Image (cartoon, rainbow, N blue to C red; front, side):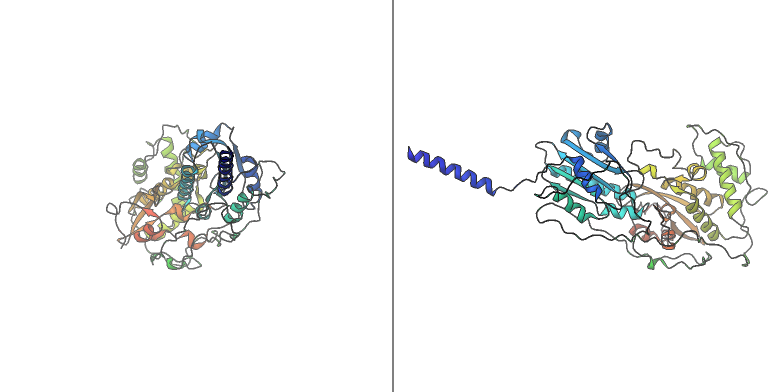
Length: 466
């Protein structure tokens, strides 16, 4: 009998020993909302964000559409996301019982990569923030952290599962954190290390494209401050020079005779449209606009195309002068689009209230509303080049991650050159300006430079630069 009792005590001892040796699963007394509030309070660069809680109607749609997650895999969660073209985002997800974190972690990392791809070229500084985004696992909790200072934020999340957790801040949950205006690229990355064994954080590798070799064509008159060769363009992000110093052709320069353009009575005939009503069925017809331009008769145009014709004609009349070379005309149009058209940030807004311009993909959105996405920028540039009889094509390709993107190629002096007006006009937030290097980074460059800088297309279909 005593032997049985001894054997039983031995089994209990072994069980206790095994339990003491088993790895401890991190736990916390905080709710996902409290965890998110702690992380958000530590940010000095995070702009206005929208808190989305587990009980909100939009929560299942958000995680399904953006994270590709099954709402049934979670028992709680909260997401702090911005509006427009801001990268900052914090999500705290509490997994359901028996749900392994691996698949959830992968989906969140894929979301970071896809959103970074959507911002790349369009908002380079925000894309750089996204590239540093991490996914941190603590037991049954997963944190998506996309902020400027990753290490201290991840360490703070780990501390919430320690014996000395930080206090929950006492302020309204919806808030705005502001900071003084600064130039892009001046933010410093903190180097606080994560506690050993507390969390798994994988910092993605940042890839910088090779230096380009093309320069502006010699036929383009240099601006007051000479454009540096593309080989000296600094790594992104670096935005410091005001874009108000646009190239101006010297008034004392004798221009060559005007080019021969197949237009009617005047070189650039203006047109007018008295506030026509644009219906949803009215779509952009580039061929019709060009036919009206070359014939001088816009009477048969639909209301939408008449507005495009009128505004494009007016730009030509106001900004182009007789005697300009095709290269000079191209430069003026390139700069006019940059100065007068903004990227439609609502197209990348995760909020359910997002309202992108319905014509941001064609010249109406650009010319009438000053808003466009890449297809709107490229189609507007294409229209102007066609009106000027400058040989031009639009390339419908992708970026390196396969997301659709469009840009142009022009033929000047018998040579093909690549132009990406969209990426030459990135989304800049705050008191930050577009530098000369950025303004012409994708202006009249080689096919190789476009490829190495993140553009992808079927190179067997389109011309190659010399």
